[in-house]
Figure 1 (cartoon, rainbow, N blue to C red):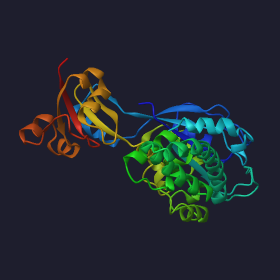
Figure 2 (cartoon, helix red, strand yellow):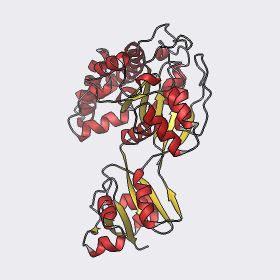
Figure 3 (cartoon, rainbow, N blue to C red):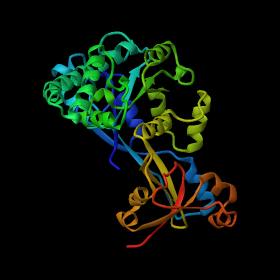
Figure 4 (cartoon, rainbow, N blue to C red):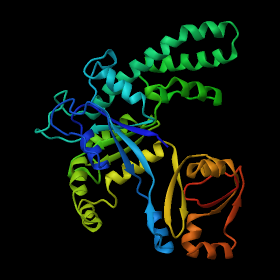
Length: 366
């Protein structure tokens, strides 16, 4: 399932350092603008503690986690919507992603230059927002004249499109992101999807802080939190440089000890990966047997046959039923046989909507 999150931000905010922590692919990281020119793509393992818990019960030959793709995109500067810096390339790359991880510099360090000379994460956010909004406004205003004529001629679909475009035009002209516009029904949602607006993509703001602020944040983080309070967006606090040091440690025990020393229970990298997965509207179902315990990715809201097709197209084509065990029941009873004996296995048909953590055996015939 080739869905991608793009890491964006101004130059020198820690994007590539963060990407290096997330991925085995090493993006160049240096103290000057436009260090990252071509987008680097990393296939990132999604942490899932449930796999280890199941493996302790099933004793499989292997454990196979699911993955998500993260793209490190070149830093943007003011004027990108007019092609300044690497603006056109940046905007083209971000258009190809499905969600945005927006990194904001929330630390002071005289040894790391800021493209605007001073540290101000809210200003930095507004710079990128403005450039994306201007490009979206260009897209919207380019479509309005043709759609308006069709709507005035009585075309019902064109009228829906025009209503949505007009609301987007108003919001973008006021310096708001497209995601702030409320869509009233599925027809409007379809129109919005087909526009592929940059500011309509789901976003996770990552506040990159120093070591001392990793657990509780700082004044910069507070300012970002206030700035995004009316947005439909998430925020995480991460010390990217500290995370890079954690990533160099050899064992899980050493990494956990390091985290405890700075007041964290889980690494920022793990939290970002999980948040990115959710940002893409993805969930996981599981299979468990002697050969492997495995996580499979599906779109939230998918029904049983579509989830069967994630494993193999034949499973979807010849779908008969899904034998589903809830994760908590499997852990509680300790085995598939014990779950069956307790009457906790559910037989589900084609209309069953899969839930995150479902453990399943598919029955099919082709």
